[in-house]
Image (cartoon, rainbow, N blue to C red; front, side, top):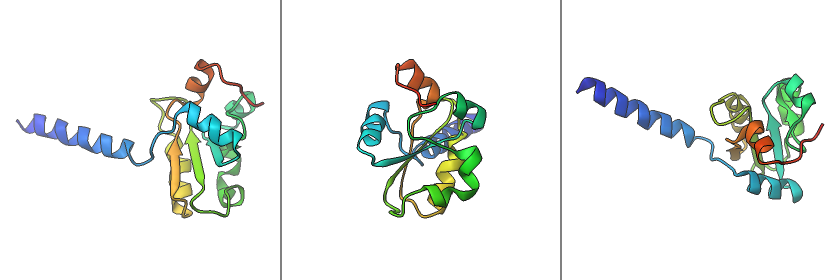
Length: 125
């Protein structure tokens, strides 16, 4: 019984963590990029960033130390962080930093760069 209770509690905690940063679909992100209403943060590392990224993305590895300089003045503006794909949690570093800087509309592209590519979307290089 104790093991079952521990499992239930860990599942609840995991779902709460997943909800910490709401997901954004590829389609909604593409729309926000086209409308210039989003700052996109790539957390895959500079080598991956150079090889190909979601259009308009900022390289977190290179710019993370000065993230406040690349984020908009409006703290309610949409900020989207992504990493490799659904099983990757590296995006949280950028999401947490943006939140710590006071941004209130931080989302996660859970599909990541792998999902972006799989959907046949254009990469920026």
